[in-house]
Image (cartoon, rainbow, N blue to C red; front, side, top):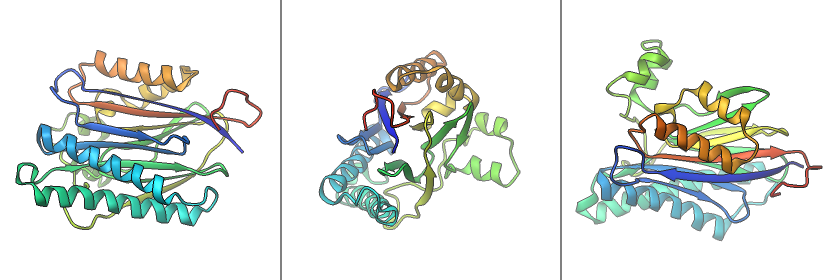
Length: 254
């Protein structure tokens, strides 16, 4: 059984007055989540907070068995649907935030080295393993759909004026389609969950370089946010970083 350590950091960035991102790390270090709100300063912050509150509530009240893969997937689906309903209902009840929404990426680490990730929108999950970084999620955005269709290159997508237009989020429809990513973790792996403020500034290879040079999740979080701020961070940036160790290590959280 692996051990793991986690850390998180969020920053408003250089050009936004308010931070509309939120994150959640469960007290038992098994659930990690990031949400990036939209819909104006008040609406965006409220939407992402509602989503993270839903994750926390579901984990507190109905956490699945820690080694039951199917139960964890069911929990993720129910939790993201609950988060969607929370944002949708709040917007329906309050005209001042009508149209608000949020992305979500949420991961659950089981006790048998297995991680499951669910996401909606363009917040991301990355795996860093054996010197290589891999994007685990597909952005639900206009430009990334064009990239997948071969109509844009990744480099063109980075500077496309429509890069912030997402095609799927929480709160805009009563029901939402959820993507799931299962993953078996190994010693020395790193996982990063982030809002799009990170990859807007840093290329995947740059994120990988920080992970490859890192020792502790706390310092990696600090460095990722620092490099994003140094790049004039046009958006809020939030990162949750998890480092995996073998069970013989004596400094793991689990």
